[in-house]
Every structure is written in structure tokens, then in C-alpha cells.
Amino acid sequence: MDAHDRYYQGVRMVPYDIVKELTIALVAVLALVLGLSFAFASPDDPPLTIHAWAKSAPVDFVTTATGELAGSTTTAGYGAPYNDTADAAQTWGPLAPQTWGGVHQPVDAAQEFVLGPLSTSSTSDPALATALSQYSGATQDQQGKWLDAYTKGLDKAQVDGSGGITVPSGDYGPVPVMSSSLLRLAQSGALDGMLQDAGHFYNTDYTRSLLFMGDGSLLESMAGDQHLLGNQWGMMNETGSFPGQSWLWLYTFWYQVWPFNSDAGFLGLNAGNADLGVVLIMGLLTTLLALIPFIPGLRDIPRWVPVHRLIWRQSAKQRRTGAPGAAPVRAS
Image (cartoon, rainbow, N blue to C red; front, side):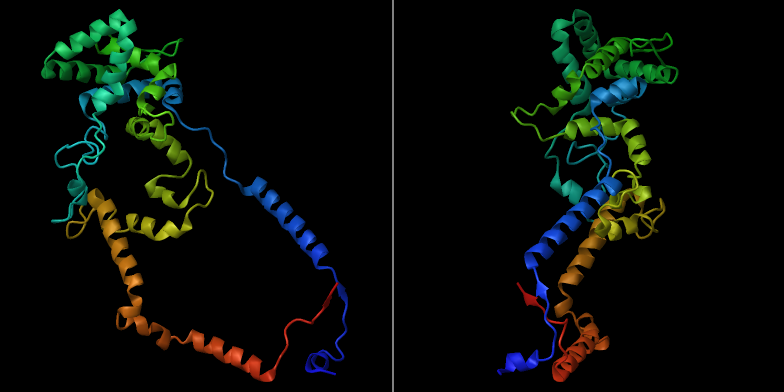
């Protein structure tokens, strides 16, 4: 009798079908995965488009388009990388990476979101062509007066039966004609294609559409309903209340605490440059993590809390006693 037989002497052996066991395990796991996916999967919400936005909230759409013309929207004053708006970049002392990067994806909000699409559409609409000519021929001061008056009129706008909007009478110049034409263009679905046309057969760049929708209130309200806003720890969630990228908790943590959630801030860090501050802090923490083996003190923590030694001692004890693991079986 060799050493192997002596080791298992007296141990009862039973037949074991490993193929059958594997099949049962695979079927059980598959059923569990399918069941949990039906019970806990994230909802498959349809994508938000400018077409849907203009249909569901025409007043908000026209108000946003008017703001693009007036240069009062977030995109119009964003700064790099979209435009060179002064004092728009986040800085902290001499650190201004947004400015250093410069404008490398230029976006003229008024031209690309409003005037450009209307110019294309005016080739088959004489009334719109006349309105555009009147608007472009006016002084900047006159344009501002029209836009300011129309913006105030939009506070009392009503949606008519055809999906258009009506505002109280006022000195709006050609702005109502332009706004109505852009609204019809959006409600037909054509504006989505115009903003996403990058000159390629396949389009994967939705920057302009997202910027335009982000300047309105619909996108933010939908994000709020799905718990995706920054003050709702949105980076950690998928749509709804379903958990998402939990490893991002440390990034979102900084936005919830002082000085990053304060207008006053501390040492120049505040809510106005929170993004830059969080990136710098996480960059520092990541660097420290990578350099732990080389930093005195941090590299000695395992010696202060020798958990690994306890594991080694337990393993050595099992080897000395020769304690076998699970009861052996015979494969068939």
C-alpha cells in the first residue's frame, strides 16, 4: 500500500458525476441571474432628444433658444473648451488648467443652436428669410432690446392647440418669427439632425445637442427625478435609485462638504471652483496611493497592524498538523 492509499484508508468513497454537478450549477446560476435582472435591472428609459423636449416643453425650449441669442445661457458663457468667454474658467491661484487647454471644441451658441439652423431652413421660407435679414441688420443694442422684451413676454406665454406658443403683444421685432420657425423645426425632429451632423456617416458626437438641452430646465428636472443631480450624489447612481459606480463615492464626497459646498470657501477653494479642487485632491490622493511603497511611515503601516502575520501563522499551523480539507470523493 503506497502513501496515497494509506492517507485515504478508512475514508468512505462515493461516486461523483462532475458533469452533472456542473450542469446543475450553470442552470441554477443562470436562473438566479435572470431572476435578479428582471427584479433589479435599471429601467430602459428612451433617450431624451430635442424633438421630445420641444414637444413636451415648448415654452422652455423657446426661452432657452432666446437665451442662446442673448448670450445669457451657461453654454454661451462657459469658457474653454467651447468659447473664450472672459473669467469663465475655474482657477485656484496660479492653477488654471481649463485656460491652459484653450478652446479646442468651439461652440458659438447663438450661431450653432439658433441662427445656423434657421439660415438653412430659410431657403424654403421667405418670411423666415426676411426675419433673419432684419435681425442680422439691426444693431447689437436693438437686438438686445428685442430679446429682453421677448424674454419677459415668455413669462406669460401660452401653448396653443398646434403645439406653438403665443406671447402678449410687444415690440419683439423679428424674434417671434424666428422662435416659431425654430420650434417647428425642433418639433419635426429636423433640428436634432442639424445639431448632430458632423459630416460623417456614423455620428457619435452629441455635444451640441446636450449643451443646448442642458441650457434649458427639462434635462435638469429629469435628472432630479432620477436622483442624478450633484447634490443627490448623482455620480453614484444609475437612473432612478439604482446603485451605480460606488467606487466614485470619494469623488462625490468632497462636493458635499466645506469648503466645496460654500460660496465663501477657504483659501480660494469654494463652490465656484469645486471641480478643480476635487480633481486636485483626488490627484494628490491617487499619487500618494501609488507611492505608498516609497513613503516612510505609510509603507510601515502593515508592520503596525500585522494582519498578514496572523494569516501566515494559521496556514503554518494547518500545514504542521496535516489537517485535510473537505472529505475526498471519487470522480466517475
